[in-house]
Length: 179
Ligand SMILES: [Zn+2]
Image 1 (tube, rainbow, N blue to C red):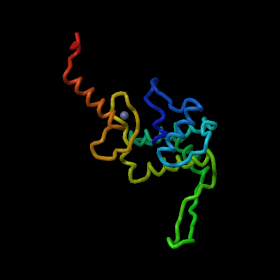
Image 2 (cartoon, rainbow, N blue to C red; image 1 turned 90 degrees about the vertical axis):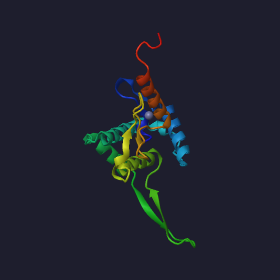
Image 3 (spheres, protein in one colour; image 1 turned 60 degrees about the vertical axis):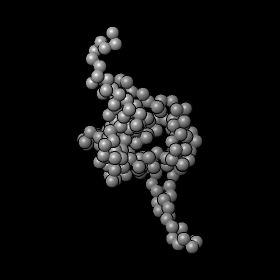
Image 4 (cartoon, protein in one colour; image 1 turned 90 degrees about the horizontal axis):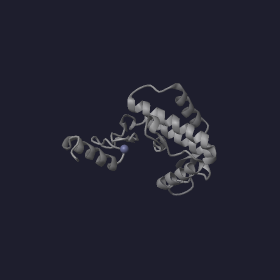
């Protein structure tokens, strides 16, 4: 979802937060720090594939928000990214804690990272939160978020604040009020 949200706005007013190699590197550094994981350095070297996955995830999540069936191309591409980085369960059983399992990647570098993101996208669209994917109602905002409580309508409280403000002004101010 965060990857999809690197494309901000709609139509001609779109802003791409992954538009340069440096921006891609910085975005992955920032997001990995937030999630307490390490992304391999130099994700930007694979800029084309990063942006392709982003566009595909964005179009699948948009289809989910709009309640329609997505195009085949993004669907197949996301499946392709996931298939390129299969994971498998590994069993560890050495200490008093007993048998422990963990998921292991079979690939490294950008392929592993993009594969994991594609897998997350599939899990999100088919998991318990699938029906909660929404587009922000804030003025001028188009970000996608998960509706974490029934009344939530914005990607972030600041969008909610701007939305309420915009409505207040629409209600209380008539055109020419400042003249
Ligand atoms: Zn928003």
